[in-house]
Length: 405
Image 1 (tube, helix red, strand yellow):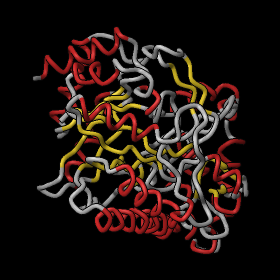
Image 2 (spheres, helix red, strand yellow):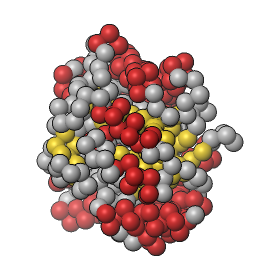
Image 3 (tube, helix red, strand yellow):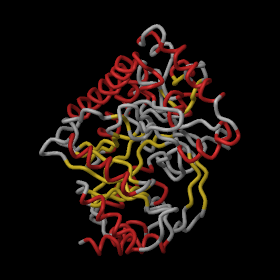
Image 4 (cartoon, one colour):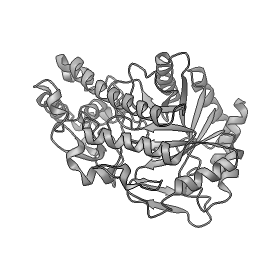
């Protein structure tokens, strides 16, 4: 199955959008029901070419009785029921519509409720990152899932950021690159020490993390900058690159080396927290809309943060596990193969494929990448992004899918 990702505003007000999607060669559209702030190109829309989305929003009508402390925001740049309008237009063209649901990535709610956000070992808040260690955050995510299933009535549910966000994030005018932090430093800066998380860790954890980050930074001399820069790995989670939490060995060591004897306990605390959140949401989805398939954006790395949440032991309650495939195809294939190993016989693996720069608008190159992912175990291609890609890129993507058929 091929799945094209799309925003509601790509469809609302553009009567040609459903046919364009149907002609692309996909069977399903992942339509954003809850999404973070962004600045998006709209190369096909008859009314505009650039859309500024200044805050995260919910693209279904907000029923006040359905929410508790945390209430999502209504968009002003597109109709309040934009998801429903887009869904109906896409289904009329013969396409299935899955609700693309972003959970803990929400700067609007994080800024309004700073007590609920991720805080690093130095106490610095990450306003875009709701911490799933807080009951209010879990309750919000659960209500979000139920509301999307009840009001949106999608053919499937896609869960993104179903776990903690971390240090890596493209914020407004991001200015963190010059600190020369390595991937391991990013892992350490992604560990949350909010009022709910900090007491769960062994007593010495926060001091150990702070010392490791400062020690690593003080050891980077000017002549070492290129080493640190080359060691930093990035896997984009959206249209721009952000650091991931995938553990690799660098000149500064690994997160396991930094944590030492605390590693196993800290890792278990974090993965247990994410597992509890994920299982609660899957249960809520199953009781609200039995039989609706669930797709998880997932990463087999236990230290992962961000859009692709850690899934080191698998999740039998999901129907599809999707891995990020925006980086080096060989590295992406390794991640896919690991997810495949974690699957039950009934589960499928999807590859989240980039159709935007730096990928070329070349059907042969894209087809080769898709073949690599297919050999690694992917039986679904999740294509990002059918609204942001130029006509040339969409044509290349359609050509690549035809080459594989």
